[in-house]
Image 1 (cartoon, helix red, strand yellow):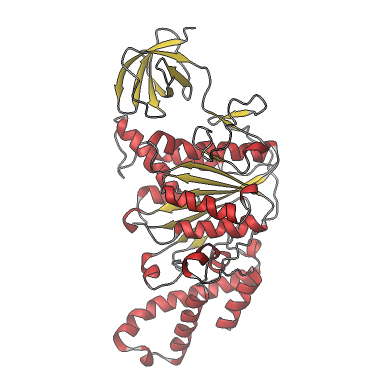
Image 2 (cartoon, one colour; image 1 turned 45 degrees about the vertical axis):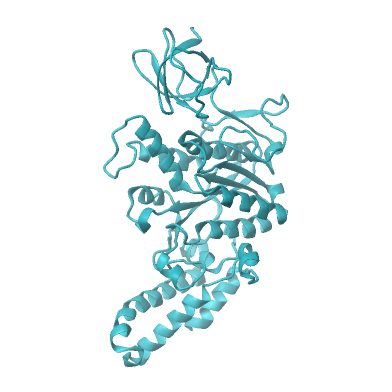
Length: 437
């Protein structure tokens, strides 16, 4: 087997390498013969002996005709208890100025593309509700262990703040391990989250991965895969229950779309990469539970131009059990969190999971909110006093419910001076009953 290849062409992040004999494997790392020993990730293979590779670190010293060496390995990240409390990039390198774990002979590594063995034995377990302390989530989109929750909204409506509050509330009260993955988001937000967790002594149960918007699309597309891979290790090898936070899943699709454009692939009808379905599906399927542990995923999804019908948003949404929709219209009313109570939905809101009391209350609340929406237009024309006593009563109850589900966040205490609030699910249900009875 020839372990050498030659660079035939370079276009932006795409490097075409020719092998005279046996080709490398997809997902293998090749090393260029430049001073930096640049990493080239094999993206696809062609029949004429060429490999289409991605310049992982955007290094510019790679030249046409340069020799390339096979490694026989993919991207490997460190594993084990030593990773807890640390921050890594997509390649497993530290971002916290602490010693690197890669290269340490005592630290085991894991190929990020290697899928865990599938468990063919299925067991039925009773759903376990994790209380978040946030009324609107615990009531409309219950947080169930091992399931997927999405926080959907446009720019500036509070997705990251709500995610940080969830991390604060759940990580503080839960003995499990928390993962936070920043995909293509602002560097400032990542820094603020790190400082918040550090101040509140929550880093000891947290692992963080960042591939923020300053990184190239290769690393932004890889960081979610790297983070999920380490989460799988803790789930399967150490039997941990994982709380997996990803901000922002849309940016993962966006990074894959940028790579697709560079690769000159014909876009799908919605304007995204032709592989959008498999890109989303492969990553989402890895956010699952096994007989050894669980991964409970909370994902924020940016909505471009506030268009919930965007193909990427719709495709990600199909993988979720619960969707919490944040609305700009609600945010402009000064309501926080700015949740659209009518569009927020959950397949987990059933009597078998939340109990008869919670389920019946949710049906009654939704009926009142829908009636409130229908009456708004009428009131704008004829005024509230012209409504029937029954309609006026229901409208007033709906207004009280909307106010009831507002809440001050712990993570914004320093910004607005308002003390954060937490509510148990029992307190939330009792409060709703008091309003609608």
